[in-house]
Image (cartoon, rainbow, N blue to C red):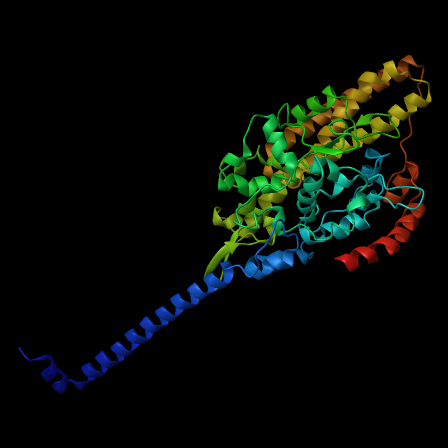
Length: 498
């Protein structure tokens, strides 16, 4: 057999193949080594702290020096261009789109102003700008309590920690007074310290109300798994809540109504047992409950939660950049990021997945509209009965039905994405609300008959937001004027602090 050198002499092209192959192998080996070194360097840059925090650091930009990728993606919440078929990140005047809401919330601040929420970055801006926060001056203070700041900023846990050093109960101290009390302190929008421990970077609960609610149920939240925490940090704020005025003197103590359970009926039973109401309806005189945003409660009743999917899996999916995998902090609708959210598990194309979502939402919205119409009529008809001399005893059961029917409506629409998260449960809740609203109107009809009222009750023209607000007695020109004056005095100071 000929030696390898003899074969090369006879066929010199084999030598060139060997030479080129060796060069390519060495080049690829060098490239691999370079990539490994680069990735190690990136890992050091991404996770070696550039800042050593003491206590709760509420300045999100300082966290960005330690975690630039996460911070850069968080800044994308500034983008308000996305709008799906139902909501999104754009500013939407809900009262303009649906004037019935003005009548449903008559006598409450939401009838003045209610807009679709934008991204987390705008949390402070939006609470200043909304007409709901009032316009305090020398003689009139804002009706909004300090507690309204609780879910708007990482400055809140910072202040609670600070106040706890000088007060027997720093939490209750923070909940005391009107919202402008902490306006000079609460300047950073929702961000890093709301969910992360600055020393360990582990997910952590920074709002006492969630911990307290689970404690009353006999549950220890410190034993939650990491996957559970990827929803619980959202549940600090995306829940139904109320202000307990009796727990601590002078404080509007933030409380979750979970003592009897976490369903719509359980919360209703809890509120009824303590005779709680957020306001008295200015037309029907019904003691009302205003649902906030029971996102976590409704999410738990859906198929995704039952399969172990967390809020972050869909609203903050993982992404890769420069070979590094991290959580995308552009918290947004999954419909604006179908590839990284939905299609990680679902193999259907994006258009089909979005169509499925919209079909669920559309079908529920049909019944929601029916319920809204019934409630508007019930409030107007109840007002008519009062005007004609109805007694409190005659109206008691009617008002209870209106209260429970509207509670179910509000619980369904206030929960972000509930018609998708738990479409079967929301359909059930809306259907029961329709039944209660019918009951209220039937009882009103019978009462009108007993009172000798046989004329048809004319419904008001609420075809626009302006007409509806005029009907419920709002002087919007005065409200806007007062608000603008307040913003001119207050916002420059806040901007300077920020």
